[in-house]
Image 1 (cartoon, rainbow, N blue to C red):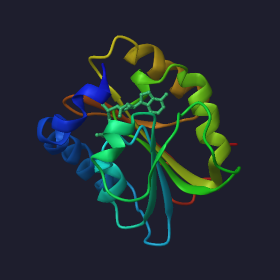
Image 2 (image 1 turned 180 degrees about the vertical axis):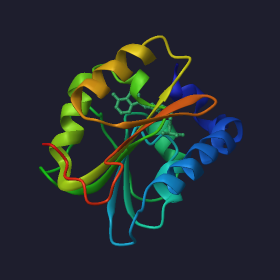
Image 3 (image 1 turned 60 degrees about the vertical axis):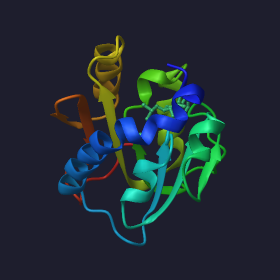
Length: 166
Ligand SMILES: C[S@@+](CC[C@H](N)C(=O)[O-])C[C@H]1O[C@@H](n2cnc3c(N)ncnc32)[C@H](O)[C@@H]1O
């Protein structure tokens, strides 16, 4: 999909359904005001601004991030321009199927996540590599898996006191 072309109409087309996914996520995990969240494949920043905490969004489409507000930067999931263990929360909503290398992207997510951080990923069910990505992710860490109408949601850890195994 060419997000540069889609950018202008993206929020009108997709904001409502993306917000529904975020509302589900909000019920499942606790996010503190003091948390620093990285939204990877942030697009227009719908998820970046949803949660009540400090957030940064990253996306390679200039046109998409131009539609959003502050704290959105240009970049790719496969080469995150951040130091190790920088973020409390890694979020990526309906984006992994677009990444050129989801394995490298996941490695980067783990690198920039703090020791007791949380990872929340959603996968578009209708994408052709959804099953492959899901299997890869579940082999990496014991995510809790939920199924929504359009996306699978993977959350780790499912309990606040659980340690991240990396
Ligand atoms: C379906 S949109 C989702 C946007 C946003 N997460 C949302 O929920 O509205 C997928 C996004 O993934 C971005 N994307 C594509 N390849 C990427 C990559 N290698 N790294 C990070 N983001 C990427 C696209 O530019 C696009 O903005």
